Structures are given as structure tokens and as C-alpha cells.
Image (cartoon, rainbow, N blue to C red; front, top):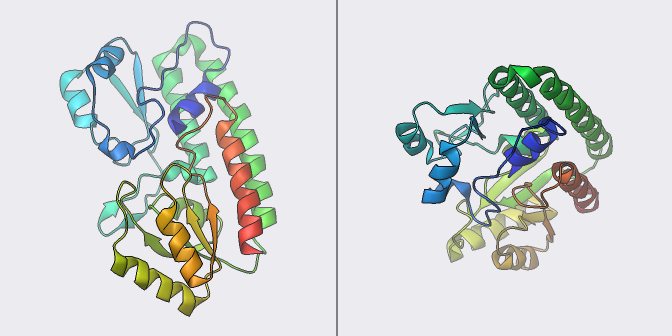
Length: 255
């Protein structure tokens, strides 16, 4: 979905270019997405397959094996990846800076694949990058001086976001979003929040909130939603809107 929103902006107004979101609106994790026959049929007729990369698309080997001539455009190229326990975290787009790099990568790749429209792709990308840059500046201006920097999150989607805005994730609960944390993990997290004075617990709107609510209530922290922008309207401004909402949430949570 984030790649789809980027591509919508980059290909905006260009005749003859069709952008499809292969995975649709995924409520769960794309890590576990299972290819369907309709996906392969769609890819067979595609000129370019835009991916997030960084290991997000676990099904990529199967696609390449069956469609060796399909051009795959990896939008994460050139981004410094965060490693956790030996595994690279693929949620790079949640950082606006990395999102800008992804937009550049996609635009350059599409310009090479479709040279007749190269200038239009690059101009559209520059326009979108300018909007992202303005938002990034606004977020820094309003977040950098907030007194509380420590947070607890559910799922591992926010390390790049935290790195960009100098937030410290003291605990990630329930790293697999489709499962529930154990009683021990919840108890340990509640104790950690009490010991460290963490003010806010953040869950993602795409996943159940029950465990996060319990941890917040038992620890005395406040509960909020933070959106990694993996679902939403099929609108070119959807990512910008999600980050604006995150800004307002963080201002309230960390003041």
C-alpha cells in the first residue's frame, strides 16, 4: 500500500500508465502474504513490479522464478537498514526521509523503464518529495522539543520513525502482529513502564488493541494509536494525511 501511494504520485497524469496495488488492503502482515493465481496473472501483464524490498516481500523468489523477465524495482536500495537480532527491518517508509529516497528510486526506475515519460515521472517525484520535505520539517519543529521521548510500541514498524524523530522505543511488544503477547511479556512490559516512567503506549490501528489497552491501564501510561500507513484511502495524499495525524497524536502523547 505505501508503494502504491508513492507510485500514484509519481505517475500522476501520465497517459497510458496504470498503477495496481497487487496485495490490496492488507489488514495483517505483508510478510506472510500468499501469492494467488490472480496475482501471477496480473504480474504477467506488468511492465514493472515495484516492491518495498529490504526483505518485506517474502514471496519475491517465487515471482522471480516464475517470471524471470519481469523488471523488479526495489525501492529500498541505498537506504541504511536497521538490523534487529540479525534480521533487517523492512519498514523503511515510516521514516519520511527514507520515504523520500524510495520515491526517488521508484521515479528513476520508472523513467528508465518508460523513457518516453521520463521527465514526467521525475517532475512528479520532485513535487511529491517537496510536500514530504515540508511535512518532515513541520514534524521536527513540533516534536523535537517535547519533553518525553520514551515510548512502547506494538509490532516492529516504528524503528525508522523513532530514529528520524529522536524517540526511544524502550520495548516492542508482540512483534508478530497476528499473535497476542504472553502473560509474562505483558507483566514484564508493565513493570518496565513503571520503572522507566514511559508516558505512552502505541498500537497500530490495523491490529487488535486489547493487549495494549491492558498494559496501558495497568502501568498508568496513556494509550494511543500510531499509524504506519499500511492501509488507508487510495488517495495520493494518504501518506501525508497519516503522518499529519501521527504528529497530532505524538504532540498530545509526549507533551
